[in-house]
Amino acid sequence: MVRPTAYWGFIVLGIATTLLGPALLPILSDFHMSPVSTGALFFASSLGYVVAVLTGGPAGDHWSRGLLLRTGALILCIGLGCLALAPVWILVAACLCVISIGSGIVDSGFNALMIDIAPPEGHAREQSLLHASFGVGALLGPLLIGGFLALHMGWRGAYAVDCVGALLLFFFLLRAPVPPRPRGGEAVSFHTVLRLASTPFILLLGLMLGVYVGAEILLGDWSAAYMQNIHHLTKVEAATSVGLYWGGLAAGRLLSALATRWLSGRALLAISCIFSLAACALLVAAPNA
Image (spheres, rainbow, N blue to C red):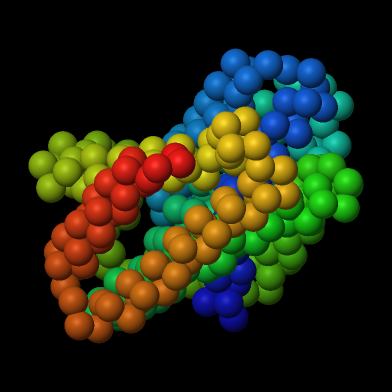
């Protein structure tokens, strides 16, 4: 029950994360805002996530992971539901911040939980499968927005659908037997987080992850608007194109889950970096980019 709940949670999380990009121009149009205003939306959607991820581990150890995850799912549900009904611009930004807080709690909570319940030799595979579920949700998000736009139903319905998904996650967590942190394991504290942040290897991995997340935000959140404004794609075509990008992410994470059987984490990182650099070079060299 715990694993299916975690996978469902990451599907809901993936949808919530990838709705904003394809919905960006329709949101700006509905509230008569200029593209300059998008900075506030992306700042709001990132700020809460960072705070929640940094504090989620210590909070889960201090109280309980089950309570933390249920709280995160409820916060995510409230944010999605309020955004689907938001009547003014400032509430849209506020709701995105609430969504990001709930998303960060769900993200950090399930990551820690799956590490605890998997044997040491299965950590990499477990994380790959969990994040492949995120990729599935990330694929569905733009397609969901595209479907609502194709039916001339606006962007709000997609957020309402994901709100229902977050509500189901909350009820699943009420029934799922979320285990406590294993005895004998070191509790995560803010001091532990700060100590890890000063480790050179962790700093290098953090830098790599920062570059990856930056590229993910750039492509996932801005490419739909770019394709509509520069290449004159329709809203539905742009949303579908972004969905294909996130579909590639899901495929990559599923493949990495299989690759961990034969490759070490270091080798998998090196191959992924080489593949990503080659793909970036092709993107820059594309004649109609």
